[in-house]
Length: 214
Ligand SMILES: [Fe+2]
Ligand SMILES: [Fe+2]
Image (tube, rainbow, N blue to C red; front, side, top):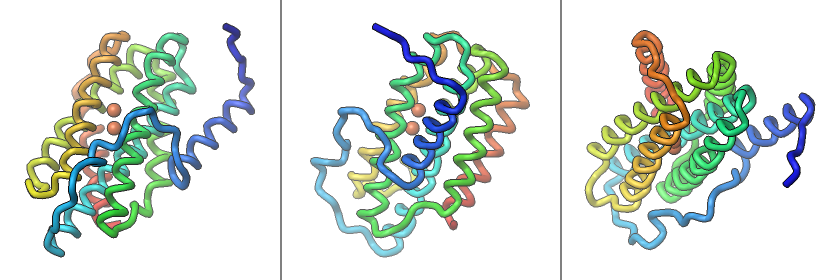
């Protein structure tokens, strides 16, 4: 097998292409079906529909951030095997992005208008984490995925039991995030210092609050 070498301009174009696909187009997904595909839709009250749609909008924005983090990190990861081990996880984040978008459409709502901003910020953070070294950037992935897991638990507790379609998507995402954390840890992810974990929690709070409304 031959390895293709990209120069900096090629890599910038690849990243730009990924950003545009993530934000405005159809990102490259895996072969997996949407977990809600075979589940009948149930009637939600207007209040429930609005609330769930906004929660799914938050999750969609979270997946925009996840995609940007993985892209930023891949740009600066040092060992090729680290890049490769993260590739499948990044592709699965696109599944999540796609499933959340489909559910938002079904619920008659829209994606967050701030997604380009969150993409840019997360990409920069991912790239910086990559520059800090593979063990830190992998540790960053581990911590991100763990925080997403507990965030999804919160949403699962809030979404009505009757909304089986949204729930099936979030359950599948949660089990993926648990696996993504394990993959990054096995690849050598280090445990991050407490203040960094706290800063990450604060940043995600700003993201979730703003995406609910904007
Ligand atoms: Fe995800
Ligand atoms: Fe993930």
